[in-house]
Image (cartoon, rainbow, N blue to C red; front, side):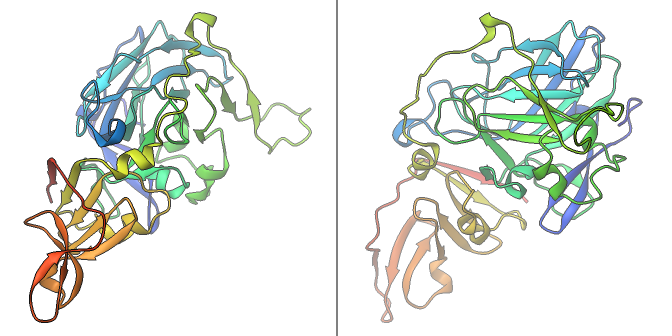
Amino acid sequence: MAAAFGLLEAFGVFTGGLGIFSFVQHNFIDYRPQGAGYRFAVGLDGAGPWGNGLSNAGGNLPDIRAFNELGDLLGTTINDKTYCSSGRTDCDSEVDDVHEQPTYTLFSANNDAICLAYATVTFPEGAKYAWTGNWAKHCGAPWYYSDIFVQNNMGADKVLCSWMDGNGDQPITGIQVHWPDYDAGFKGNGHNPDFYCHHPSALTFHRDHDPWRVHVRPSKRNMFASDPSTETKRIAEAPKDDAKKSTEGKHAEGLRERMARDTRLIKSKATSHLATELCASPDSVGPSFVSYHERKFCHMAPKHVYSFCEDVKQGDCWDDAKHEIVHKSEDGPVKRAAVPAVAFNQTLLWGQ
């Protein structure tokens, strides 16, 4: 935690284990004593139905419910009309009239999918904390790469993003975070990243419709608990007029299928972005992807990897100039491969 700002260090997870991300002042909303301020960075927004663009040019920011350390609801902000597009790092939202530390926050997804690269919070008294989307991949939730840079101590600079969607397109409908557990000085994780996947108070990827409750760590002073080390659920209900009963999209096409037909193509020069890793993961969701570091293309519909045509003598390969999967024969002729055609009308190039 850092109030007088230099760097704020927060636990994150990498392939090699637990690491430290270093956040700077512009990653946070300005201090505001009358409430809690949240800033989101969006790695990617969702595809519209049948691979078309979104109707509102971005994903919905999640609703925010702030709770104190006892699990008491402090305030709620509804963001179902607030949109934020891919690559934005200054998508802000506030929960007003919060005068205690909102140590627990529940982010509840709305109906246009969004992939969060990170979320930060500024408490009413000025304390700051941060969370990154890398946790989704480690804990088996839907994830994708992002082009958003956060300095860290492990050498991989681009954070991953974590998908949320409220209309049933994919399983994660909300994310609960206990902010102090991500402070670099927190000792309770045993320096083991799996702590966060197995302690719901620290991190929960919700799968229930419009989640509204948080898991709260029992007080050490509760000597009457049958098992003081066991986490309990404390339920704090939102006001009745806050409950969203809409079933819009309940029978909608799933996000994975929708993304498989996404007409966007992501091309990345980042050395940490691997087409082979993306296609190999059962939890990755997003547009098809070109890794210039690997010189490979991940076709996300069948989760199949193709090498660049210049790197193979024969067989199906990726023509990066034409944006096509083609078949290369031994004698040289190249023709369209006998696979479903891929068509892209928007290319996003991610830098180093």
